[in-house]
Length: 344
Image (cartoon, rainbow, N blue to C red; front, side):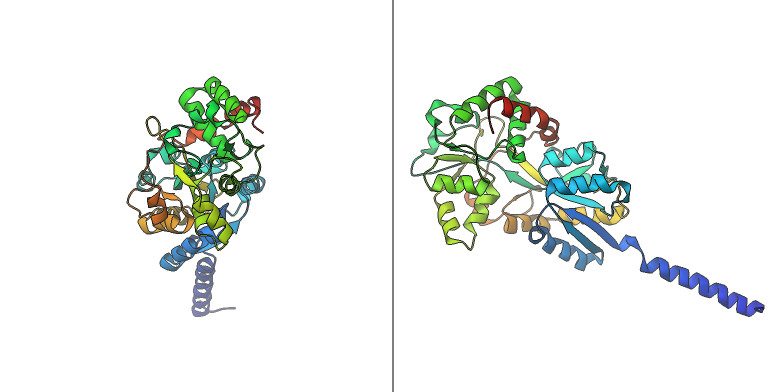
């Protein structure tokens, strides 16, 4: 039998062990990230966040659609606290699948312009991805260029390169056009655009840029960060190809050039909500936003961040201010329009 003093010491030891156990397994000091961005494009920022806050970041990377399916399969048991992915269409899809939840930090939500965040607070844009027209300046006078719609004109027959309709960047571009002009008008445009293709769609955005440089086509539609990456590539052939292409900002006299986002959402299963929102706030700081521009060649979502000189050299441009949520809402319609137009 234990005397009263021994019993007291025993109870104190039990309490202490319980507290220590709680501290050693404190999930409040970590945040679990599923990222569709390659590790080298996000890990340096996460490491800085970890060093400055003491919050451990556990990173899992994978293909965007595969990560969404993983979240769905894991359900409430998913360890993920946040999802970082590209294209508003995917963020919209994750929300529709009930894989995300609303943020409760009003200051955090207010730090992102309305056009680049979910109206219900389920996701935020982290960077902007412009998709302008790129052209061969030795064969195309930029005065010939004006809008996405004008690429359907007869003057461009056999001169256009663009990715396939299965590419979500093109789906979002078409969705933005449907939002502006309606499905019928965009279907007529897409049918004429297909007739102007220099070749059947093949490859990614870099391949379209290389095709322009090689003379296989005169204009292409591509995201600017691909051109940025080529200009900064260790591959001399890529640099040379990129130097033969110029950027034109379409639709400056009306709605503006199409932009999309890379973004972040809190998962429905998140156990570390405060730490997740601290990470989001960190990624929206001017220094972090500038990092996206300097390393990835993307545009910040916040106006105060500095952008890379290469991006500055392409000039300022008017952005389409449609809420990118519409790109997700109209994705199914966009795919149908492209299919009916024969865009493969």
